[in-house]
Length: 323
Image (cartoon, rainbow, N blue to C red; front, side, top):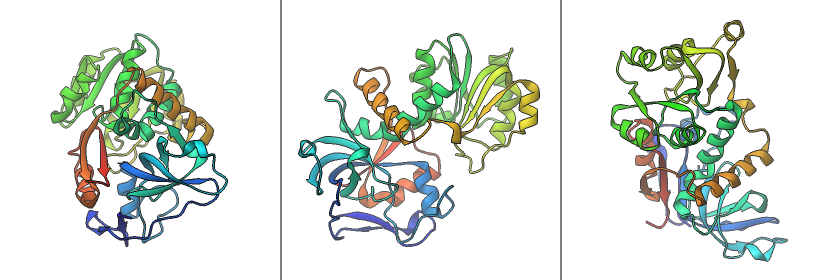
């Protein structure tokens, strides 16, 4: 099979393409997927660099935890109805940047017929994350909701969900991505690369905001948290800036602001599986849509990682093992 391997932690240059690895064999309760699309997440870039939260990657490593394709081989004890199925699946945390990937039966999602396989792959992680965040925030009609990185994979779906709920959405994005955020339904889009963006935000929401979805962290958190009014909710779900924002619990309690950590989002594996199923169903019915901003041939995974780290990408980035 073809795959991309990181032999050691480091920059994007540590990713190398190997066109002749042995094909993996599915074990009991597993299938082998002929991969059409491999999703890249921001945490992949952190794992490659050796600084991801949670357990460290073991090198050499084939990164990637989300794929879309067709089931082409069944392991022992596997329901034969999965043969040939069009699916998306997690891969147990690794092994996705390849032309063939193994997945447990329990992790497979059949892709609804109206939905494109590329879109389903893009929704695998981002759709479930956005839905879990949206539910945890309990977004209501007429609330003011601020969404950072609003043209990204998760942020774009959050804009769609909050808009559908009847909230007034203020999207924060870099200048080249403002139109994309507006296209998701945000009536107000602010360039948060401009030094005066907090002033613009206060002008757009003079009475404060009800919900913040913060996927950036660092100084962005420092500017946003004071704007959340009593009864509001602050959900930090990423650190695209490289550093998580810090909010003192006593300060939040004193102001009556609920700070909901990422660890409290979505519940256990069964809940996240259900969120993925729900995301695929919503997309099949046109309620939400994924934004696939760019694709790269599998052999250009290093270039894809470099683009994500430079924050020049829009929405989801997919690798194409057959390109």
